[in-house]
Length: 375
Image (tube, rainbow, N blue to C red):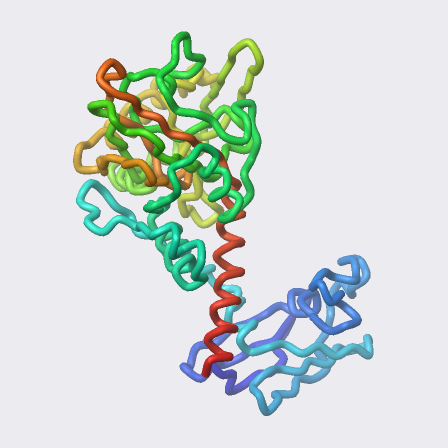
């Protein structure tokens, strides 16, 4: 997109784009975004403090360069800033674009999956998989070597593995006297992991090593799709679950983890950012008494939505399959299995969400650079 007209306007700069749309940037925003060598270190970090800038910067003149970028001279500063048209278009200070996500249910036909050997060696394959993962909130990797510890290797390749009280990685296997229902053969309703932790782990990886036992199928539910249905059906209940926090707790002999967080979180524009749902770790609410019954009614309705069969994506992990889930969106569970008739052994780890987002952005730069060089 090209800028066809740019001129000072009271308090900032107004521009008209080649498609006829307009944008406006306040002067203080533009001055703060200056990327000249006086203002920015080669690392991109600012060399000034906000108090070093004029409270109300004023534009003296604007020059449109032959490449379409803008050159702004600031009044009373003897300072000149250059702004790339692409940068200004990306930051038009209108409603920020929503992340491209796809809500899904049990009818999701094409799972977001990739072949690990291809993903590990080819940046374009890895980027395609990451973009599909981000769109759906989960992704499958096939043909991951079936050996203990591999889940952490994949986690450190995609992001940064987070060590918790369970260690750098953990085993999901039926054991005597477990401290967590995950280490039984019982079925588990869909949930987000560790909502009692602050911050909640952003991503969970589960790698299947053994899957001989009857049962133990994986369940996935799109928590964002369920929350959107509640918002549509009962907006006042949706709002209550975004505003009133729930208590979550996990305690054993070595840990006592507690936090308070809403079941549903939204950003300042009302877009969904997280769902925290875990019946096993829910520890009640501490709120004014008049909110208790309305909150529980909203909680029940949300739980019923998440249990709708048309929301449950059910599939079986085979040895070598590795499931990567946005822990605050893709709620996961499993059907019961018979540990007397076979073994079921998964290994898991947690990865910070921003690690995978960073990896995707870096790959986009690398792929774009490689494609430009090939032209």
